[in-house]
Length: 216
Image (cartoon, rainbow, N blue to C red; front, side, top):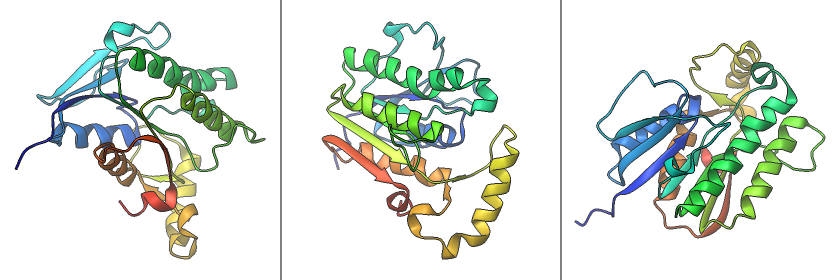
């Protein structure tokens, strides 16, 4: 059996709920020989294939953005960011900046986690920003552009988000009777979907809604 050509992966948001699971999947995959993560502070674990790069997103160094496949799991809240403007910088500007630099350095695939309901015309600020980043990443014309729109995420966060924990508890209770698209989803499933789809030689833009992600 011939193994696939090994590639380099780059992860944004490796300390987050989905990013952490995804990074673990990537370093164990035979598909990638090198997994880079852009971090403000070091992760709590190491791996021979894992390369942690201290990175200032406000002043990105394009020379560090070199990979075949880029995975964007960045995400914050307005409360944590401190303002709508700061939230937009993390969830919109940073992905756009890294995507442009990656494409200039030869990246072939860009995969991003946005959210169910992402829509640039939405009256809901969160959904609007997620829709805007999808829209503006699309016009960069990556050979392969993958969008993942999960519903409410289940998983163990390192940070305390009381509202999300309460919502997740209620969602787990009623999940069996909720339509598949709106059910809560394990972050691990989203990460697994990101890994599997990047190995399928897809071309062009593909959007994976939460009900599709449930099947991974």
